Image (cartoon, rainbow, N blue to C red; front, top):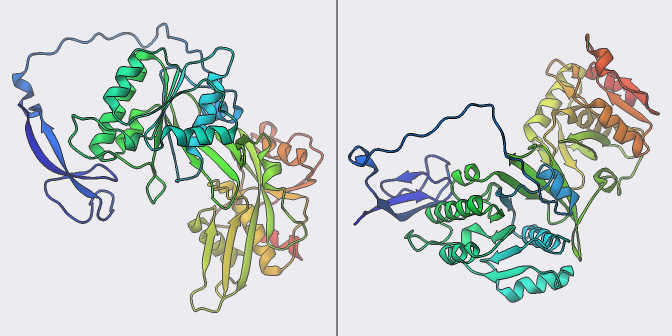
Length: 459
């Protein structure tokens, strides 16, 4: 009989302790350490067990199995997953509550089940009753889709049922509601999440069906449960967006079968999520020209060019310490840009509050947005608007130089397609100038090498 040991496990990161404590030393979270029962199965006495068998090694070069991807019919999903769903792959989907994870997966499941191939799709909900899922399906117009629906939380029952099917796609909503009788802890605990995910992943690999696992997120926006969960799966997708905006971004942060920098853009409507083929036009739809503090940034998300509006507001501060508020960008990078403008351009922001916003609820992490941010801040400070048909991109260094960025031609092509006639860009230096040279576009490109020259646009 295995000896039962009591341990204390952090429900945020999975760190274990011999006794309870208020703060987890590994992740710094408070009041997340819970008592659990661990099965001590004698790993310390491994030398007393029988010897293992010798494993076979093969050359690195050899024949490989080719995978025929399942096309979901939703281009944004296929883009993010690398061209479709690979049979036997496990995809973990995380996002804030109410952001639309269940809606998105129900639409994917219904779309695959309704295709000519009639893929057997199984939707297993542990959070909602069957009637609740049916209400959502009626609202989305998917009630006639041949989806196999169930409400269950016992993983043993789920595995036994799926063993007798020819499933192609299985959705578990969510992994935090599943439980195994062998694990003596509550559903959602670190031990339960790890054990349930392991059993389901093992079945998906053996049977060859696509497994979607829906995961809850913590206050920091990371998927709840043990960190090892993200290592166990093949793909990790985050569904992002603000409740006040109707845009939703599906972002891949891990993908064994494709790129990790692709995004899919959706719009939340009454009939569910609708894919957006031209996100740039959508993000700029409500933009108003001839207003100070506004600049259009030509960015890149994966292989997709994306134009968004950068808004800045500089106002006199009534406090001894001026305020810096940022939405959708790195606040530390804004502080660096302001310091460079003060040191290199003799501009004074010490008596002003600075507010920065990326319109549309999009989050940008590209350093190429430095130039657009600087232009928006200067425009707001001087109260002089930039031309409405102008875009900007470039990275700013601490000495004030403006550095070149990748895929300049792709950014300019997107700007021209949306009707912009000018672009403020970094200079193109070096031997690679011919390769990196700008193609012939019907817009005027102004190369700027230092932030001091930005002031000329506002004189």
